[in-house]
Image (cartoon, rainbow, N blue to C red; front, side, top):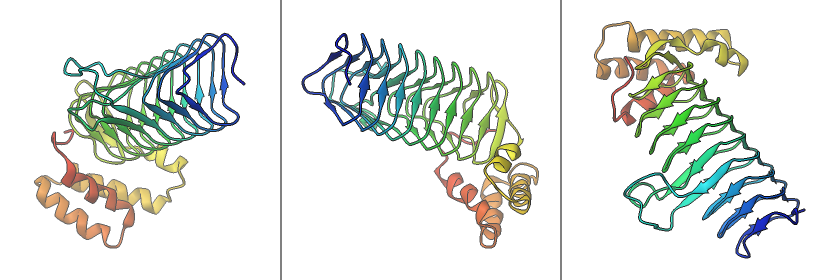
Length: 256
């Protein structure tokens, strides 16, 4: 199911049911899983692995060299899970030898037009990056994270699960789980309660998460003291545990 006008490297490995549209280029050391569709005028370079049932729309650039002056052509990788969608002009770069050596994308993510994931990033599952949203190098984002249009994340930042970044938001510090942030630089505006409702969190769970947010941001406690209180709450409120797991990993301080 490869259009005769496409160019596919002899070293590429395409599973059953893979479709490649006209004028697309599949480069060396590319592996594409069963049922994935690569539309017209797309470029996939390797070493890159794409999972099952993904969709790559026209003019997307997947797996090209990192945009890093320190990169000297080392054999780094891009690894993509299943059921991801890459819309027009989306760009995904491989890792660097001075970083993880690999950029990793989970499952069931939507990358809208002109979104960008830089080298050595780690993206979880079920995330949405809206048009023109960007991740600088070495960024890590958890599951169910949403970046609205033109949102950008500074290199080496982390964003916890279920967070929502408003349009034009500039993230320069780590964003704990569940938060809704906006501004330049980003500031916490509360929790992503609407997103949690859509994911079937109960009213009681959302209330507990709101209380955890108040402990972290409204109690006047130092971070270590807030973490101690959140640890106590998590013993009977499992939905608070993501705060407890995230905060010790913070390297750039948290949004304030």
